Image (cartoon, rainbow, N blue to C red; front, side, top):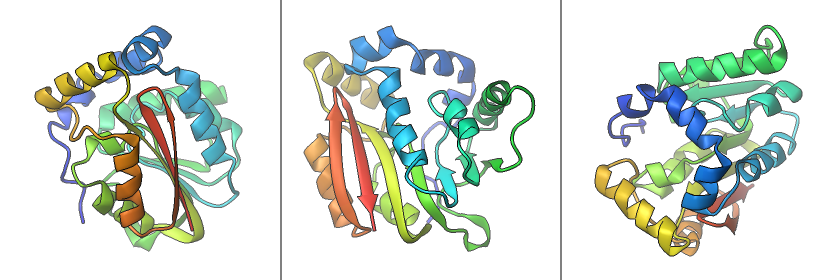
Length: 215
């Protein structure tokens, strides 16, 4: 399976720095999604702190919520995105957080997240703001699950239905083709369970759902 479900891959690439600033805006996140950037970072921190083995962050974008966390961690880490401009912003953020160079244990790869080279396996796979971008949630979860080690876990986030304002914005994004689907947290959980990768739990804050799947 390949990562062929995304629409205009150049859309965010052309707006990488603006997108980075938007993700970090407390006002934008509060008004549109009823969330805060530190909630994303807290979810990522729990994922990064969940083990010591290889970690993969998929659809990493600009690593707005995770650059400092990856530098502070000690795990072998791979950051993957299809957009070279977004990865370059992520690289700059990690370099600044490290106070010099990107640590040698952190690799940034511009590639398909569902096609790991050399059959790599990871203890933890993290994906922030991912599942609302894909039309077939089950297939993506299964594809990522194939990359997990025996006792690994997936930590994935997705925009879901929330307040009337959030729902209206989701409809606008869907109509514009910026997201693939609008789901409730319960629907997202059902799709994750049906993928059969492991035990599923879902938490929701505002219009953001946090999915944890553990083997």
